[in-house]
Length: 137
Image (cartoon, rainbow, N blue to C red; front, side):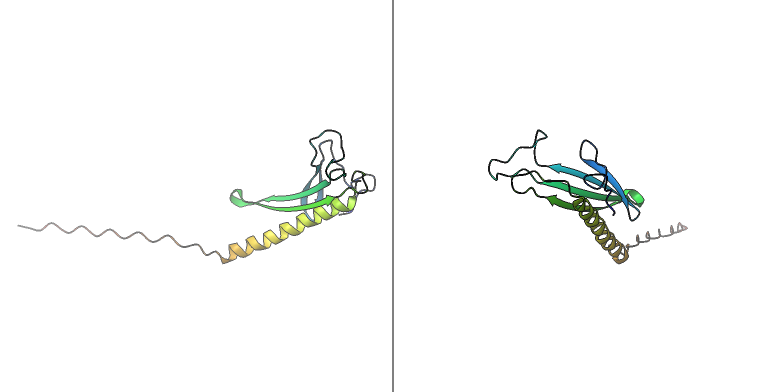
């Protein structure tokens, strides 16, 4: 992924911290958030630091029969020296790369599982015995 130099995080992010990028034939959904309750950022009284920013990425592809395969990536941007975390395009690149790598690991494992699974055929129904002819008196 090549970050957009015109965007602080390297990709367009909406007001709710969501974005998406197309990478290696997949649409990767992004989400940026911190552990605050949505109010103004404040210093944590216990640590003396602002909250970290979480950059998450998710790849999801649908398959046959309602199957869905996913891959996840997470990168944390830590604050430092009593200042809030600053936008880091490398964090988005890292989260996208982690999600795509996780997706490939899961895809490979799923393909191996499908190759190893041999369906058990349904047993043939027992043929009904032919009716015995009536005996003559």
